[in-house]
Every structure is written in C-alpha cells, then in structure tokens.
Image 1 (cartoon, rainbow, N blue to C red):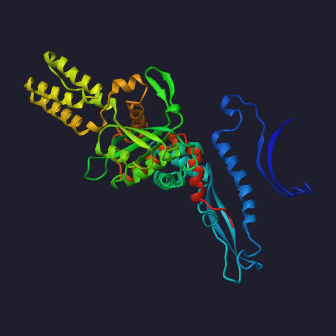
Image 2: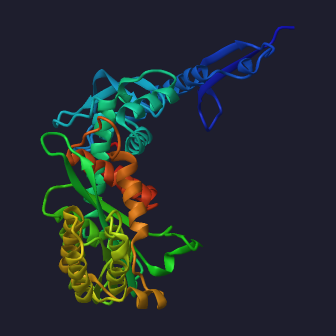
Length: 441
C-alpha cells in the first residue's frame, strides 16, 4: 500500500468547529529514506512549507484590519479598493492584499502593511539584522541571513542591513541618553567606572578617529574567576564615536551611572587612561553624585613603560621610576626620569622618556598610591575596560582590511554592541520596538 502525508490548513469557527475554508499545504508520498538527507524535509522544503503556512494565516488575518466603523465619526465605512503590499517576515517574503476603507467624513484607512504598522519588516527580522550587522560586516551578514532563508532576499541586502543598524542604533542612543533611562534603579553607595577609547579607521582624508567607551558597575557585582581574571555580568556599557565634544558620550555616561544606581549619595571611582577625553567624561558627573575619585589606571601606566629599550646599566633606575609611581609619588618619579635621561645618549630613547615624563606630569591628579589601594582591595586598574574596548571596537571595527568607517556608521554599530555586551539587549529591544512600530487602528 502506497501512503502519503498531507498537511491541511483550516480556518474554522471556534464556537461551532465548522470549517470555513481549508487549503492543502503539502501532499507528499511517504517514501523510505535511503540516505539521511532524505529523512524529513530539506531546508529549502521547510522554508517553502513555512511560506505557505504564513500566506494562509496572513491572508485571513489581514481581513480583520478592515474597519467597518469609522474611528473618527463612528459612521459606517465603505470599501475603497484592494492594494498589494509587501511584508517581510523573518525567513520569508509575502505579497499581501490590503483592503482600504474610507468614510464620508474624510477618514481613510492605510493601504499598506507599512501604513498599518509603521514598517513592512517584521520586528524579528529587524532585530536579527541589527544584531548580525553589529557582529560582522554587512556583506557577511547578508550572506548569513540569506543562508537561513535558503534563498537570496532583497530585504537582506548589505545596504538594507546598514539601514537597519542605523535605525536601531539611533533609537538605542535616544533611549539610553534619555533622562528617564535607569531612574528606577536601586540606589548604589559605590560605583566603579572604567573609561577608555579605541581608534577606528576612517573614511575620507582622516586616518582614524577615536571612539569612547565607558563601563559602569557596582563593586559587589564583580565575579572572581581566577587570580588573573574577573567578570562583571551586571554592568552598563555605553560608547560613542560622534565628533561633538563628547556631548553624546557624556549623556550616555550619565544615564549608565544612573542605571547602575547613581544618586546624590553615591561615591564614584573613575579609572581612565589619562587622555583629555577620558577625564572630561569622568568630570561630567561631578555634582550629580556624592564624590568622584579619579584614578589613572595602573594598566596604562605599565603599558607606557614597555617598548623603551633602556640600557642594562640604567635598568635599576628605570625600575625606580615605576616604583615611585606605584607608591603615588609622581614628582619623585619625574625627578628620577630627569636623572635617567642625563645618563642616556640614545636620542630615540630620550624622546620616549620625555613622552613618559609629560604623561606623568599631565596626569598627576589621577596618580594615587596603588600599593595601598591594592592592599585595601580598592580598584586601581582598568584591565576589564581594556577587554571592553577589544570586544566593542577591535573585534568588529579594527584590523579588517579595506574596512573604513564614518563616525555615524561606527557610532550606530557601537550602540548595538554595547547593549549586547551589557546584557541589556532584551529590555533595550522592547523599547526600540515600541518606538519603531505601532498598533493597528
């Protein structure tokens, strides 16, 4: 006996169970699977099946949007033509017939999916494109999404993914820089802030531009992994690549602090690398918390001491310079550097030592007694911020051949990556969705 499998979709009356309309979606002979590939349905067959299921539901569901009564004057409406409209689901594309209605008072209903809901792209697809575009190049994202749909889709083009990233990135910035963001957070007595930046290759004449990143967390949320690694599962990270005197970054930074519980009674410790941009961001919350402690992080100080080829006979004095800094004595460190320069004849080495001396002199405000802070268990290094820069900027926007960025393009990607990195994406996305989509009338 030859058998088959038939899939039937029915539209029925829930009260009576009576079938109003039905359609055969698939009708296949049941055959033995000689190979694993023949077991079940192929990927492309599954997508085709999903296409037919979606079409059956959408065609009947959209009829319910046809309003018989005018929402303005409450009069009876009349039909005003059928209009073909595109709808892009997460894996399939559809052509939908929308019934337009109108009223003698002048009101008329929308004649497209976009007119009804604010977009013809399903939120699941927009979210998918934004996250994918935040992780890899738009070209790769396009290929990945097409592979999931088992066909090439115009809606998944690299230009469309760019538009999706822009749309979502701009919405995220508006949400996170709002004065309302984080207002319901539990008050914190202490907050730790890591501020840093990374360079991104630029389009046009400029070789690169700097993007700023800040991570805010409560000290009790640091999870010990081993002696060399910690993790911060609960944190807020924000970033900006805009050239606006850090106005956007400062607004995002304040919101991040507020979302982690900053109040007028909170003591905030800011660790930064010593650049003017970092300190200006850190100073922007002065007066909005109880006090701010500025610390030039030890990681960056240590980095300044690398790659300087000090002669062996002067190595001990060089180590002394770093020792004085470790104990919070920048003036003494500068004196030792002057002594060291007088003993070295290499112009290149002396030039590097001059830069180190200038760095120390410019950042005296943030040089603390690191030894004491370490003994007391207080923050003195921003190693975690360095990994943040790597995750947010370097992994997506640096070291890629021929990948050049505009500030706006880089900024929008950073909004998505920082939300994902902060583990706040699910909540952030709900807010984005509420902005970009609307309920039908």
